[in-house]
Length: 137
Image 1 (cartoon, rainbow, N blue to C red):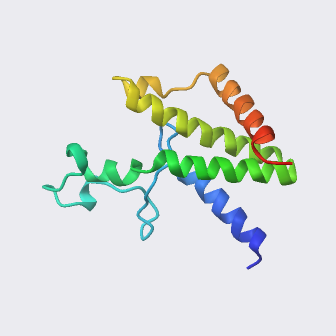
Image 2: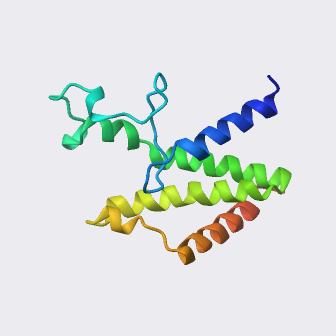
C-alpha cells in the first residue's frame, strides 16, 4: 500500500473515530475491538492514580499530548499542501487540547467543553494562524 494511502487511512480513523463526545482525543484504544476502553475491560477493584477509574485513565491519560502530535502533523500537512481539510483537522485537534484544559480546570466539565459556533470559528482561525506561523520557512 502506498504511503499516501496509509496516511489517509490513519487520518480518517483518527478524525472520524478517535474523539469522544466532548471533542477530546482518546490517548489509548482497545484496538482488538476498535473502541475506547470501558469500565468492564478492567477488574472492578482496580483504580488508576488518585482513584480515577481505569477506563478513564486509559482513555484520557495522554490526550493533550496525542492532540498536540495530531495538531502539529496537520499544521505541517497544511504548510506542505495548503489542503483546507488539514486546517479542519488541526482545529479539531486544537479543540481537544482546549477541551482537556477546560475539563480539568472547571467543576462542570461537560458544560465547559461544549463549543459554540463562534468558538469553533475562533478555534479554526487560531489553528490556521498557528499552522501558518509554527513551521520554519
